Length: 89
View (tube, rainbow, N blue to C red):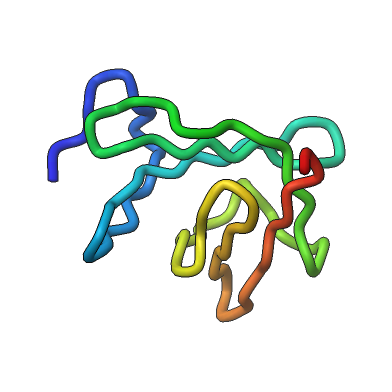
């Protein structure tokens, strides 16, 4: 699937049966800003999240995986599964 021009080259695509989405993450103070975009490049949500466990390193390789949506995201890094919970609900 082609990445829309407005989506960061660092974005990762999670393909789904019903819908697919692009995800980006960046450190913002002590939290993480995760944005979700439709396959067409429309911003669906942009929220702050906290990681559990807190040892996640945004500068190391990682992969977004299921279950990821606007309230909770899952990332695998170095064999560990990190859950990100939005603190904006």
